[in-house]
Length: 269
Image: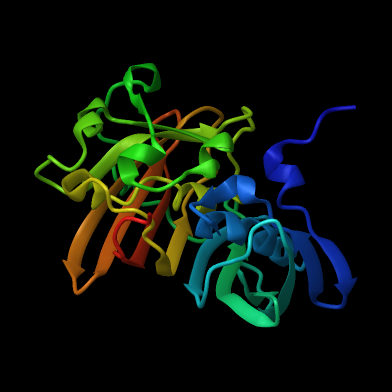
């Protein structure tokens, strides 16, 4: 019998009634004291996927109302808004301790289904050193504890060994599950949110940067192996930052894009 991965074990859901599931959140995916926002999405996407036949979450938009609670049970509510031949739309929310933690809208489709003529327009992966020549992500460099690194192996471009001294708020690097589990379209929203905030490149010890809203567009199914990630802060004002990002698979193919607004709160002590 094969062993289950951390991704499978720690994002499991159990139905409790129609449209409602329970899940147990693990602190192993934390940023500081709070579960990573991308991790919180994983059991939600499992619940949504159980309601439709299409396997791929092609667009996921989430508004985070308050942090999740680690090492605690959570309730997931999800419903199908509109089934479709090419895409099905769903809405869901996560609840803990009597409070809504986040609300999500998503559309699932089958990325093997062509919806029209193929036009070859994409974003090429930037050239960066291979993973073995990159630097392991460190919580001390960012100014916050990172239990997340027990679940995701994150390696940054060697230039980021001197984060806080760079000219552009851009992060380049590689990511994969620490236990060797291969990426899937269901896991791409997590990988879109697990790299250091790109403002880290110019400001160094930024601490925890909580997400207010995250949108992930899944473009293609990823090949096995490392994922290459580039995130860039496009705008920062009044403690709020806008960040965009791309993910390419091990073949250099674009597999996902993201955009989010986050809060720059400063280093946690």
